[in-house]
Each structure stands twice: as C-alpha cells, then as structure tokens.
Image (cartoon, rainbow, N blue to C red; front, top):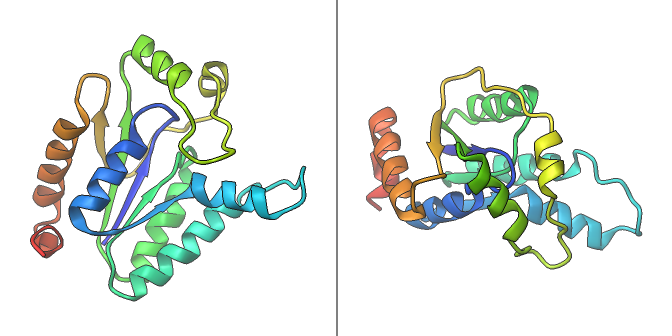
Length: 177
C-alpha cells in the first residue's frame, strides 16, 4: 500500500505521517530529509529543484516492489505532483491512500510555523510569510483530510486509522501484522 501525505508546512503532516508509519511498521519516506541530504552532498548554491521528489519516487517504487507499505511525507502542493504518486500506485498495482493535513485555525498554524525548530540538521524552516505565499492547489482526487488544529497527534492517528480501515478494508493485514 502507498500512503501519501500532503499539506502546507506546519500543519502536522510529519508528526502524523511518522506516527502512522510506526503504527503500520511501514517504510517512511520524507522528501525534506532527501532534499537536505542532497544539499549537503552538492556544492553550495546547487539548485535541488524537484530532485527530492524524484529520489523519493524511486525509493518508494523500490519499496513497493518489495511488498512494503510506504508512507510518503511531502508538501505535495501541486496537483501534477499528486498525480505522479497516483500513477506510481497504479504501476505498482497497490492500494493508494491520500492524506491532506490542514490546520484550519490560522493563528495556531502561524504559531506552529514560527515556533518549530528544524529536526533535520541544516534544514531551514520556512517563515510564516513563505508558507502563506506558497502555491498550493486544491486536491482533485478523493482523499482523507485531517484537521490538525484541534486534534492531538494521537487523536488524529486514531481518526486516520479508522478512515484507512473504512476505505481500504482489503488492506486490513497492514495494521494487524
């Protein structure tokens, strides 16, 4: 199964994606981690562009081909990027579960963005102004939306697991192993 998270920075997607990956004993692929590794590997000023997503796609494809459930953690701000994940699931002949994390309270979202610290060495967190200015297209395909403004991570995980079980009962083995 391929589980793809998306959402603006500061919405809680990394927290929730990590919890879900741990719960399911799934492979966890975080685009920010891959991008930061590339920043460290290449000469200063090298433009990374879409390379993080390209590498994440390859790592995900490899793990899916090995029969592993994969949780992808990325902003996935544009519809064409989300479609690439959908195409990968179809190519791998595996179930797809898409999750969009939102933070419906702008004050809480801003506070989270402004107060959080990078958990990847050298990674620069975006400012609130950068988050607000970021292009973010609406989702066109069916997906689960989790509002992290008023849910604790544990409560959000419980909701997400219920949604996963309801929408993908054939994949029940992934959370019972």
